[in-house]
Image 1 (cartoon, rainbow, N blue to C red):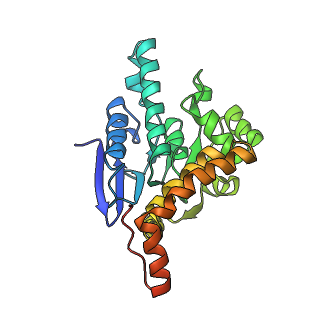
Image 2: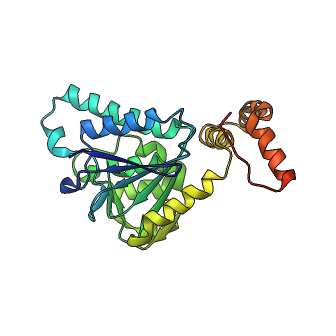
Image 3: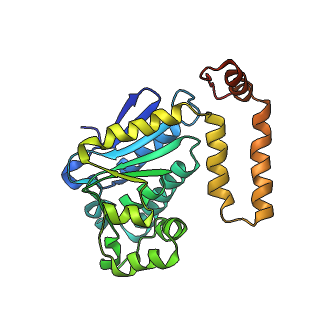
Length: 258
């Protein structure tokens, strides 16, 4: 049985972590397969969104596979951690909109996986936390970078320092997730978001994603310069001309990503 399931729904690529017997824990093999799937569609204009979710009822992802990790040497553990970071970077740098559909436990490396996505939607039974803090480690796969930028330093520190679990509604209040829905409605809701994204410009989405990701920590002048560098090339593209033409012709634009 494949550890990663890949399914197309219109312009959405659904990637399902398929290790429900271990709460979809990230093995080295699963992380590599996930990164390969994300990179494979990087330049595929027929794919507009990537949706990450977990198989079964118990978890989105419970983090790294500790059984596998405990058998590694320190050097191998470091190599595995670096591979995890490369996976998260692939999601962050993908020109696609990456969405996490989270049900059940979302812990440690699984939480980091969700934070590397652009948008996060949770079922009412979703639970978030950092068990590394009770295991003599800390969430070093990017959480200490991602989470403070999302919810602020003090709130992030409180979650790290106490290692307490956060439910879906609290995660919504903190800004970790964008919306909470019933478990049986989660995927249909996320596919609805993907459908809305499908109507927008793929080149514009890729540019604004980069501007938000890279510009948020720059000075105003530096961010403005980045903004202009990203915007100007779009005005000579087919999609820009198509968008303007469709506006005046009162029809939906047909974007090609060109």
